[in-house]
Every structure is written in structure tokens, then in C-alpha cells.
Image (tube, rainbow, N blue to C red; front, side, top):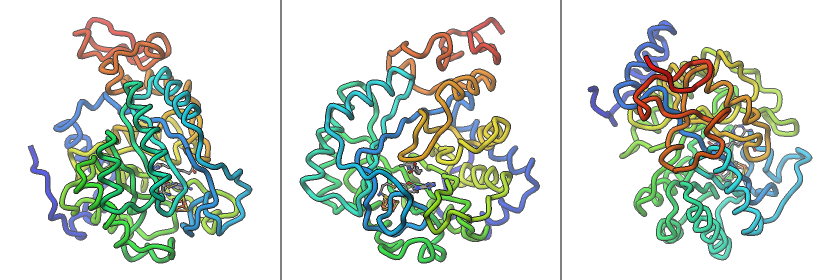
Length: 351
Ligand code: SAM
Ligand code: DTB
Ligand code: SF4
């Protein structure tokens, strides 16, 4: 098995990007299979717990107060609403519930409320993830003590391109929060966005920054920009689809043991393109009709896609929850029934 490396050079990653596409996908797929069951896909559901009016100026984001995107601003959701939404996500087959807040950084009293939400979601038997902006070390420690499993904080793009996208905080600020999260003992969810009119060198720079962290993030979301009218990137040229697949593949090779999430942007992707992403090593998705404020594929469409590709939702059985997992659900893990799954029906059948 190839070692997990933290000493990747940019040239090495750029050379991977330059490989013939099918060679690159083959290599990434082989690395994927060394570390994971390539049929299993982790399934997370997102909820925006505080929406819009964010003081930051991230050029991609519909929630920034700097841009007129027509978004309905919403204060922090009540605990009951969050609990009910998490229960619904669980019943639909998600195993992780990710709560996103449009803050530059939470105030301590905001954190009190978020901690109550984390505890309520954990009580339902779901893994928890929060993304709420920059954290101080003591805030990260409080979240860790509350039982939070993952904190999401993205590097978003290369250090060089970062200033073209966000001016209200620095790349180093992001690294400081990631270090606080890591030091507090939480799992790190950290990735970025492509399709922001960046150069391939910036995609290399983003993956290099992630793959040379002292520990690789356990979860690496690769978002394809959702172009929202009113944001400065509304008219960014669309990224060539195979270039997106290449980005997934290089992420998989550079961070072999991390879960690579095919994140935002699936709504505009064909089933075939998503299949190529899974082949290239993606093994997580956001599931449910909404991301934070923008659309995601219908849950039913994702179930059909999983059935067609013979994929299963990771951890669904572990959660002991069969609701949503039978007919039309994620299907039984083939390794559990000792048979193989029929690729069309996703039911277990004899090999
Ligand atoms: N405010 C917090 C922060 O920025 O860390 C948490 C919420 S923020 C919306 C979480 C992540 O969503 C961002 O880091 C960015 O990677 C992603 N994101 C936001 N808008 C996006 C868009 N239009 N397309 C793709 N990804 C987006
Ligand atoms: C991540 O990397 N992608 C998610 C999650 N982490 C928080 C957010 C995607 C947001 C897409 C735009 C929106 O729906 O507002
Ligand atoms: Fe605010 Fe996060 Fe959106 Fe940036 S990405 S504007 S910090 S909500």
C-alpha cells in the first residue's frame, strides 16, 4: 500500500493533473480501492442554521451581505426545528448532519446555542458537523467537549488566488482555525471550490495546501461553484467537466485515506459525470434537496443513481436505521448479506 504522504510537491500534483485522463482515473481508482470499499459512499445532509447577512465578502457566496442576491435572511433557527430536520435526514438515510451558519466567527453565546444543537443531533444517533466560521482555541475546545465530530472550514482556493476571492480574512486565518480544530481533537472537514475562474495551478495549489497539512483532513469536500446571480462570480465560465474529475482524482491520490466529497454543484451534473467522479475516488455526497441555500439533486434521484451504480450509503446499517433503506433506499451492504448487489435493483443476490 502506498504510504500517506505529507511532502507532496506542487510539481508532482501538477504532473498528476497532466496525465491522460483515463490513466489518472485508473490510478486514483486503484488508490481508492486500497483504502476503501469503492461501493460505499458516505451520506451527509446539510442545514443552514443561520442564513445570510454575513459580514465576509467571499465572492462565491450568496450569503454575503456585500452582494444583492435576494436571499431571505434568517436568524439562528430554534433547537426544535434543527432537531426535526435532523430526524428527517436520518429517516431518509443520512448518517451525518452538517449545520452551517453564515458567521465570520461565532460569539460565545452563539456557540452555546450551537452546542445544544450538536447534543440534540447526537442524541438521534447521527454524526455531527458544524461550519460556523473562524474559531479561537477555547471555542474549538468547547465544541469538542460537546461531542461535535467534525468541523468544516475550507481553504477554498490556492494561497495565491485567495485574495481575489476573499478580502475580509486571510488564508492564514483559515489555517489558524484548522489548527485550533485539530488541536482540540475534532475531525477536520476541509476542502475548496473549483470553477471560480482560477487557473489549473490554483487547483494544484489548493490540493497542495490540503495534502501538506500536518494531518490530512478526514473529510475533503470538493465543491463545484454554484453560480448565484448577484455574486461577483455569477458569470464565471463553467469549468470543463473532465477538469473537475481530474481535481477529484488528484485529491484522492494525494490524500488516499481521506473521504473525498463530491459536494456542491451536483445539481448541474449528469449521472455519467458523477459516476466518473466516484470512479476517480469520490466517496461522499451531500444528500437532500438543499445544500445551504442552493439546490441539490432530489433525494429520489440520488437513490436511483446509487441503485444504478451499485453504490451503498456507508454506515446506514451501522446506524441501525432501516427507514429509507429498504425499497428505494440505499440498499443492504453486499458484504453484509454475503452476496452481491444487483446493480439495477440494489437488492442482494447470489454472485
Ligand atoms: N461561514 C462559514 C465559512 O465560510 O466557513 C460557514 C458557511 S460557508 C457557506 C461554507 C462553505 O460553503 C464555504 O467555505 C464554501 O466553500 C462553500 N460555498 C459557499 N458558497 C458556495 C457556492 N456558491 N458554490 C460552492 N460552494 C460554496
Ligand atoms: C462545503 O464544503 N460545502 C457545503 C458545506 N461545506 C458547508 C456548502 C455548500 C454551499 C453551496 C452554496 C449554498 O447552498 O449556499
Ligand atoms: Fe460568510 Fe461563509 Fe459565505 Fe463567506 S462563505 S460569505 S464566511 S457564509
